[in-house]
Amino acid sequence: MFRFVCRAAVSSSLFAPSSSISNGYLKVSELHTIYYETFGNRCGQSAVFLHGGPGAGCTRRHAQFFDSQRYHIVLLDQRGCGKSTPKGCLQENTTWDLVDDLEKLRKHLNVERWLVLGGSWGATLGLAYAQAYPQVVHALILRGVCLFRQREIDWIYKQGGASSIFPFSWKNFVSVLEPDEQNDVLTSFYKRLTSSDPSRQLSASRAWFSWEMALSFFSARMPLLCKFFSFFLFLFFFVSLLTHPQMRNGFLKDQQLLEGVRRIRHIPCVIIHGRYDFVCPVVNAVDLHCAWPEAELKIVGDSGHSMYEKGIARELVLATNKFLA
Image (cartoon, rainbow, N blue to C red; front, side, top):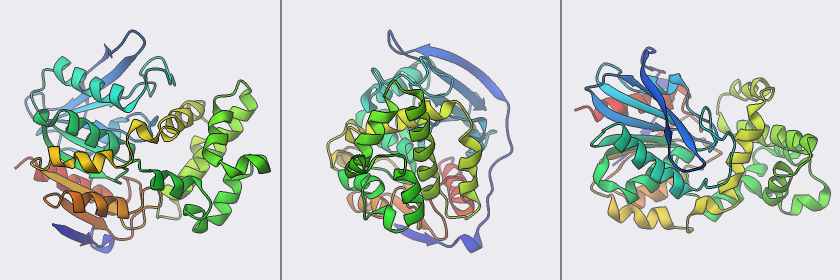
């Protein structure tokens, strides 16, 4: 099923903030400990929210996509993110480590089955988790689909992709690199981010984050957020974690998540994607829907990548309400 949703007919409709009902730390390996927090109704239907990035971490606002009177909402900071420790650590930090962490957290919280909502990198992780543990996933909501195929990475970090739509932002992005480094932008940035020179790390982090933000919002006002966030010390950790899986294609084979859909076609799913998503082009959602025709595809007009675009936010709330039925 496919629907095209015009933003002119919708508005943002997040639920009111709710108080945390529990929080804690779960040691998932000798090295890593993840932070989690729960909201809503302890006896309600369980749902887990998977943040993007990777590296972004969760905020309490993420719980507002769910009806707190009817959902038991689980937020977590993935390895190296937010309040999880060690902060920014890239060791033992792969897609499949994170998949196993989710299952350990589910058991720790005594959750039998849960709804999984993930956007961007969170959609990647949600698909990987559902394909590894389909028996415990009640439903899936995927926003801003990222399948970590090589062409998706090339779109953002090679000349001729997103750079042809945002030429000035691209020029600012690569300006921190030497001319010979611009032949392989992704590798060059990764070397700078993992170097021992703090000034090179900081300049690369700021440039990378500004480029990502330029692509993330369809609203002209939204990119101003990058000026605000660029002053925070967590910027380096965020960008380092972000580039880590991109250097390795998300620790996935090129078509792995599409080929794995056959294991989860019985799971109810809603796919929500902004028509003007320049981080994860809308063709990603279309390709996933072609492999998974039972899923409901909603392409939101006049919306980009962010979950806080008005049309995207409304469709996410409609989807969480739908799976309460």
